[in-house]
Amino acid sequence: MNYDIKDDKLAVDGELRIEWANQSMPVLNRIKERFKTEKPLAGVSVAACLHVTTETASLMQTLQAGGANVWLCASNPLSTQDDVAAALVVNHKMPVFAIKGEDNKTYYKHINAVLDPMPQYTMDDGADLVSTLHSERTDLMKNVIGGTEETTTGIIRLKSMAKDGILKYPIIAVNDAQTKHFFDNRYGTGQSTIDGIIRATNRLLAGSFFVVCGYGWCGRGLAMRARGMGANVIVTEINPLPALEAVMDGFTVMPIGDAAKIGDFFCTVTGNINVIRKEHIETMKSGAILSNSGHFNVELDLEGLNNISASKRTIRPFVEEYKLKNGKLINVLGEGRLINLAAAEGHPSSVMDMSFANQALSLEYLVKNKGKLKPDVYTVPQDIDKAIAKEKLKAMGIEIDVLTPDQAKYLASWDMGT
Image 1: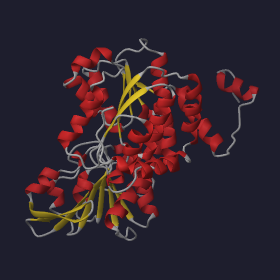
Image 2: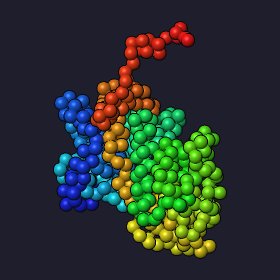
Image 3: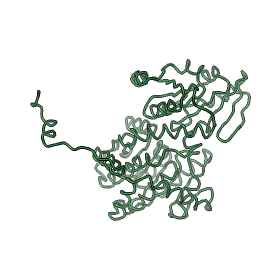
Image 4: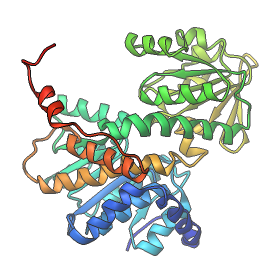
């Protein structure tokens, strides 16, 4: 079995951490038990490009239980938990290609490694796997039946491919499931991003000015948690609708050019490029802290920052201090990559329980509907979304009401008025 990880000897610690995560993933565990019996993925080959974390390990175990052959690589150079990668290789005989801190060359070498076995299905987080398949490994396309995508950033890329007629196979947008983005993006990103910033800096948020760039579901969660820590939260936006919502939610809204002069902490969560640029950085306070929790490190203009800097040094783990030519000090966390995974452990497992339940059930759906879907980006079927929410409530010991026959009839009618 081919694999490329940091150290096999880390497997013992990784297995314990996977076990800990599993304890908070009841929905995925229930799916795993059904998969063991039914084997709906028997003989299916899957190339997965995901953050190699304890929660991802639980998903990989679920796919294996369903009969799938899985090859796993990292979807971000800094998001791998090396002990988890070791546990999957040593204890679960899964080919894993992921090392925390790998350079870009190794990152794409690992992506190609999971494509080499000619997978039938892809499971992506950011669409780098799909992009590589469509640009450099087109020889493998004839084998691919379908795929899933986990992130907002990835879905933006895939919808662009579909619009241009480039996308060659159907992909389910897991991120668009309500049991994913309402919870994973909002509560998961909110908590884990604050966790990453605090672990990296050990700075006090209370009383500070905390700038959140983007007020999508991730931005909503981050702004909510930063305010909960006592920060004065400023939101920047390019869309008038979420900007208005941020105002109604009690946050200060202004352009990034104005926020740059005020902020102590900055975090981008937009999915776009060069959100904070060199002209903004030059006006910041000395000691300002910049971070990103969007999928790629392109949200911060790091090239522009380098151009206006006289020097830089690593002042503590995951903190690079840039000394600008104007004498100011600017701190960038986690190389501008996902700070919640670079400096912390990513989303809590209880949130990823629903996200990865969507992944597992969406893959099962693709297998069952082989040949029936045209190349396009599809939403998660609503019955899957609702079933996951129902299972999560059940696991939490919460019951809800059901419609009476009269209520169901009323909602289905058009002639029953006042």
